[in-house]
Length: 402
Image 1 (tube, rainbow, N blue to C red):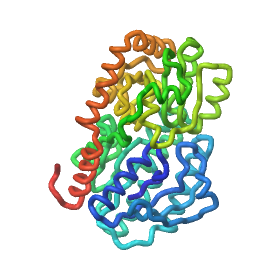
Image 2: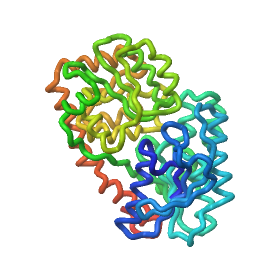
Image 3: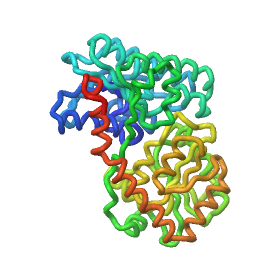
């Protein structure tokens, strides 16, 4: 597997790459190698133990991980993102992993460099190459609001097309990605749907106990956003909503390129807290302790990303308020789950109104939230997700189409 993001990263794509590789190694007994970057996400800051490391090979849960150093831009611009991707590509190409010829190569995209590296390695070894599209970087550059996004979108689109057209099969995590992948020249018959799964444990502690630990009053409505604080999330809408009603507590838990800007923007908003990412063992209980779980995106974000946080939100059993474009994949997933409500993106008043409606109807909110775990059990279990990945690889190796 080629995946820039990998354990110990605990947010975004890293957990999925890690669970796939560990499943191959531990459950199926395969010799599994991963070409990865240095841990840096979502803080966009190198983990202390990896600072100064140029290359490193380590064993994690039976997986051999080959790490290569790269730039880590703390502020996201098109130029800095290009340098980030370029450093991954150059270092990976100059120092590929030393290992026996594999049976297949999988890439976790949106890393453009990772996709190109995986395609080149598979061609060199003459083995099947299978990218899994988690995000579309060309569309992301155009839709996320990143500085210099138009030019970046064109370059990223060409790199994506290069990586995807060379694939034996292409996995996509959501059906809204398919038209764009076909538009890059990929035969529709080579595209397979492989949705992500819920990779977190079920909550175990009573909600009241966790709320007391966090300092959340029993009678206070708490709206929690967890995960990456980047440009495409448009988290300014939560800051604006918090200004409108000081009785509602808004909590942003996580890290990302916009964390400092959000902290400055909300410095005079006493009912908004920004807290660091939770430890893995505490994470499910903190999600479950909130009254409402928020997912936000800029109105322009349509078909380039489906937030990985949704699978965790559904598992937590709390209602979701999604401030996202109704035509996008995120909205489709929330509607499909039956566990949340949609509001107009970038509209703090609409978001706050939805929160108040849920707060005034606790039984209705509980019933809405309870649909999440049922949706996970029926469609988003870890076993089902990994089985889809296994079927994708088996088919690429010449097995039957599932």
